[in-house]
Image 1 (spheres, one colour):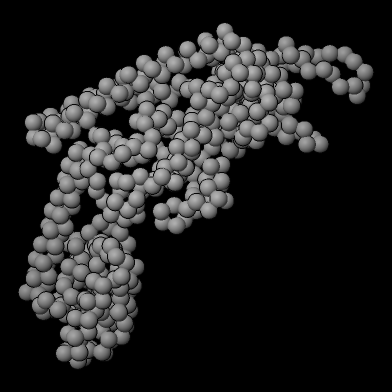
Image 2 (image 1 turned 60 degrees about the horizontal axis):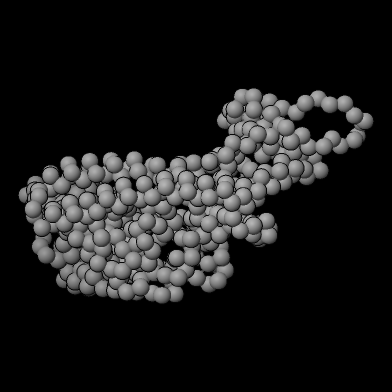
Length: 469
């Protein structure tokens, strides 16, 4: 006799968030339980969770545990596939139900797990459910792939930032924010600083949440905002919606933000130090690291020990060194001939890369269109795409190692950098220095005599700049 029956309800895709599907299942299950005279002890609900893709189903797991503990002696479901879409899950359920003498009732037909015939029927239904789920997944993947190749809108969920709910019309206020953020990132400002400013100004994501650097990064490197269709992280065609920024800017952003050299270990490089990552030991060639000194004085040092790579060769006071390097940078950017050489060098390199990437991306788009129009087959498209993609990867790698002129564009040859310098963020200052300087070599200090306690002047001869031009 059943004393503690459980109802289990689940729906895979609840787009409205109203749980209407599980409510209808529960109503039908209650009617069946009443007809059988089974008292319902509890209803277990997993809303908007697929049983096929391996996602955890908390209430289903709790149901199994209560079956093991024999606090549930019958389960009512709308259909057997609400419980399982994977044969391995079905076998686990059968084992537990058999060991604990749990009965199963479904609205769409009786299944007696206590008999070989009932278990056979359950397994057959389980295999059919698994096949339907796999077949549906293939159809959906193929559909999204074709939509991507044609540059068409797809998908549900929240609207993309910068666009209206139709995913095509640009939302002007958000597009302005995106354009300004892109220019600031290319000029050297950090995603973290921009996120903080947006949050302070009340700007929220389309889900009403505060911005985080990784979320902002996903927005500005997406192909969508430059009017391009992206599939599994790869831009494969021109999109049917208008662009907020140019494809060129997307290429530059991806090259910059995907550059491994941007990822630094905070234990070794203090981001509050202007020249972190720019200084090289003149003896062992290791990078100098930031180091605090007594009474709050700052320094850079060749650090020995695991992970540092140095041998303790040199140490240099931070303040006079930073003043010296900053002065060199001001002079470099204010010298007309030098500033023209810097700009021309970067412009030519970037133009060459842009020509290469533009041609290859156009070829990818044409290949995608040929595949969509069935002029070529899938295997032909894959072979041709892979060859073009390899060339694109090489070009993007070159772009990642090519310092752009965005950080210095407004200062080259104007004499305005010195005046603007105090108001720039640390990230922007570092970007400006990195545009002009590759690194600075620091030699060991020479032993000099002098009265005890008398501060020695900074030895400029220890410092050798290595320029990028």
